Length: 308
Image (cartoon, rainbow, N blue to C red; front, side):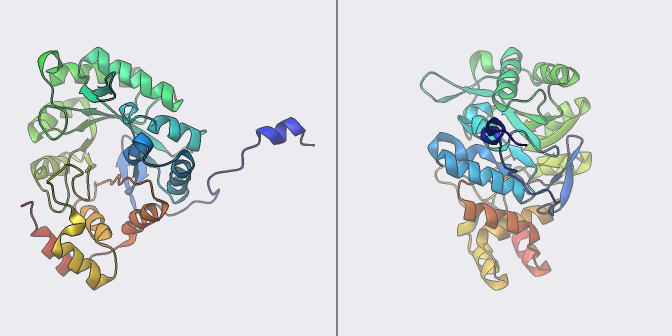
């Protein structure tokens, strides 16, 4: 018989027990196999969604087959929201975090690149998410804009950073090491330690990082473009405003965002997407992009786009 206390502590299953299709298919990441469409938690930061909506969006994502969530302790409340919504975590869920920055006393983002700072950030992510091991930790380099830029004692050698992350991996605290905002030369330099993925700014209209993607192809490294629909930074174009993208969307009956995401999936089989949103309908649209198949002529037209 179920007691009153047991009923009070009962939590109904948040996720379906039967397997669901992996959005966009699957690809390897840090020794695991994940859906090619994941979820970026940054859009839940800073009160962009109330707690109830954030919980619903996270559970909706996992319930739809998403098993790769990108987060960071310096995103604010994101880790706490993920833990509250999803713990105890599904066995196949890969939690990927990012280190290399922290919030200062005023809430601004500042570099934190020194090895002991990276270790402290890993420990903070572990504690906030309530896990003993992070599936993946991405090292966010801050060598150049956009965003914060290192100076002074924050100009840290990449090898020293990789040595610290490798020690954490050897200790079982992280499953894989990734890089964020790096050059092809930095990827080559880091490759011997075993790099699981690279996160760089990249979209159908901004191919600045194409040389890095080319090296990922050659090395078999997962490619995780951030701002896949164009930059949130001022004076930078958005994919959904591009006339070629919108024309193709109208022609095949999907949204412009879905065209931009589908092109990224078609461009390299190791691409993993982490579009973020705090809106359930937008989340469903992003997930559905995994089923969009662009005609050959559309891919050719999109391939010819470049950032202005």
